[in-house]
Image 1 (cartoon, one colour):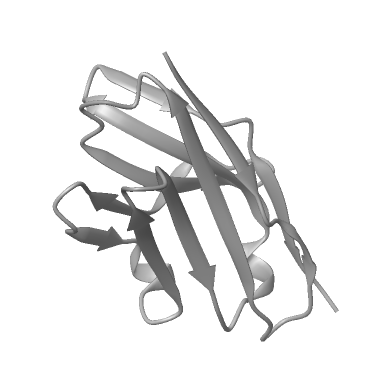
Image 2 (cartoon, rainbow, N blue to C red; image 1 turned 45 degrees about the vertical axis):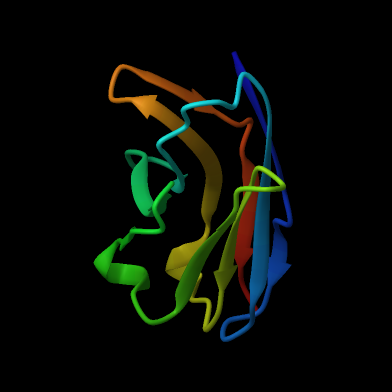
Length: 116
C-alpha cells in the first residue's frame, strides 16, 4: 500500500499562487508516475498534471503555462506550483500515485478556492 498526504491548499485571490505538495510513504517502490487530479462540484474528476519517474510531464490544456509539476524522488514527494489562478481552478485537488494502470493510490484531497 502507498499512503499519500497532500498539503498546501487554501483560499487565494484570482491571479494569485499556491503550491501543493504530496508526500508518499509505504510501498513506494515501482511508482511509475505521480500526479494531480481535481474535482469541482458537480463535475467529474479530471487530470491536472502528472510526472513520470523519468521526468516526463503532461498537463491539462487549461493549466498549461500556469502550473508546474515537479517530483523529488529522494523525498518521495510531488509538488504542483499553481500560478495565475482563476476562479475556475476552484476544486478539490487529489494526489495520485500509479504503479500500473490497474494499481494506483489516492490522497484524501485538499481544497483550493480561488475567489475575491
